[in-house]
Figure 1 (cartoon, helix red, strand yellow):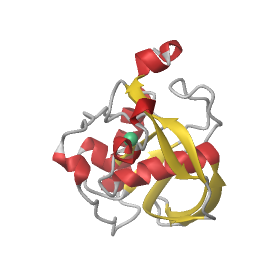
Figure 2: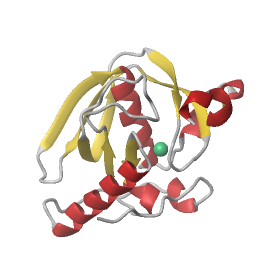
Figure 3: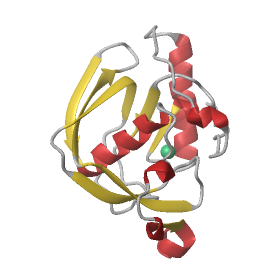
Figure 4: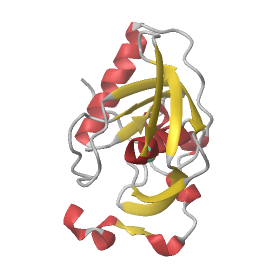
Length: 174
Ligand code: NI
């Protein structure tokens, strides 16, 4: 049980392309995921990617299976550990939505994402995951998997009139 330090935007480790996991079902991988769970829970995150705690591996976690106080209006996303993910857009429809990031504290921005995606990858035991999802679930997966490519959501904001401090944009969330 360890809440790890979250890296913040500006740290060059957040700009790296993460390495694929090559060994599943190991104590080290389980420990990493436990630390990510604790860190995400302590920050009320909707998701977390390993590079955000300084670990250069293609591991993301998202969803809690319960409503999230940082995104109270969002649909519930099942708790998922996703390793070595691959995202394929289903169709060319985009959707704009507000995002925040634990590595970009205090800010929110409107970000375009694919409305519907298929994602594949592996769970910690090496079992295949293959899901087709849309809306908020699809947004969270795209956001977290961007971290594995060194992309933070502000890099995808197109309209900077739709980017600002959470306490100003959404005072009810502070
Ligand atoms: Ni993030």
